[in-house]
Image (cartoon, rainbow, N blue to C red; front, side, top):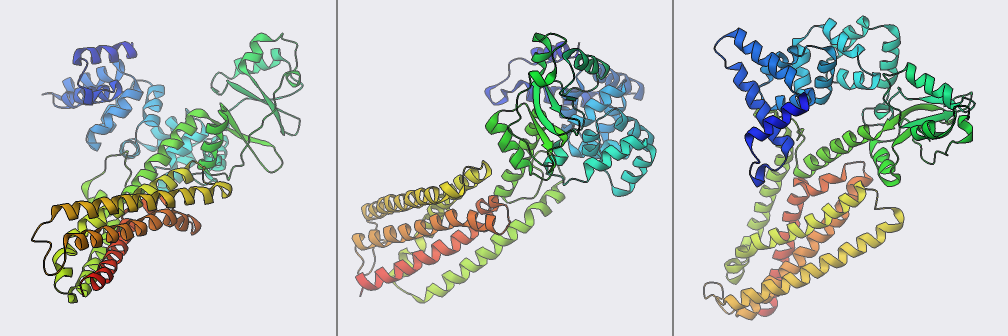
Length: 488
């Protein structure tokens, strides 16, 4: 019923324009419009009837995404119109952090307890992260002790670690068990969805290998698991970073990654869905860092909050701009031909060198994020980027000098300077500035990484500001030297 309703909603809207190509995005917009219209009905009864209809006809996952387009005050009311606890859980797990916070402020501790009881401990910790410490403690007092212990065990791991990503609800069997016994256990635990990969352990819970669900179908009931298990080639410890987990699962295409302790005892398992969410978080954080902001790019936030997330980064740019003005003020003592054309080409120099440096740093940050920049390949990658930067500087330096020469504008070629000299000064100056940008773009990500700072910062305003200062200074120095040689 839900999927058919969603398809009908899209068909009524039509195919849409090329800029609105994604059907899911159009669906989110249409659902948000429906919810918004329901809130503007003339009577409260009509409003609630329309909300109840929307909540019953559409998937909670679709509504969880669409509701983020609405004001925060309206989101808990839609949540309350879900008729079953299962649909409420599905909605709250798939919506954004701001919606969860709005819902938690609206519902009681007892209703929050009912939601958590229907979830795994992994999902429960995910939700509890959005609560205040005081309310977190109140909720734990309402839950049964077994659930509390599972939540505390999960929460002890750092937020971006394998221990937090792993699920403690998976199937693990002793190698002496038969296919028939395993099938019976799976039937008795329908709530555990981790059935594609079944892990095999010994009596001390040490991981021996795994079997797939297909083994249970194609093998006779009397066959023991140890007779058909496959070895586990890849495992991680609970303190492994999420980046390490993503790298392993991407590289080896494993459907489930076991988490083990130092003794190789099974602690949990990480599924592909969890890794996909981790990849989205990593991408969002990297993009925000490269853009020079600490805001969550996936969630709508107030203008004031977004301002304070961006302001610290922009202060650096402001200070660098003031420093650049000081540099220009220092070089004002050089009169005549220098002031006539050198300052005229400053935007060209800073723009070209900045883009070249940004390209170098972005490529290196990508390689570092994907684990492609190892000790064995680091020198070759650095050498390649430096060669490319030098080539860019030489080619575009020659081109810029040639174009300046061809312009042959009387307003530029003043005093004793010929078009050839002006083109030479601009071209060599641009080459020097591009080399500066290349060096900064190549070595700044490595320096940031060495000191424990996210290398994505190297592509943000900090390095951009430093590049403007250094490239402009190099350009001025080269221009002064060449002007002294050719304009004595």
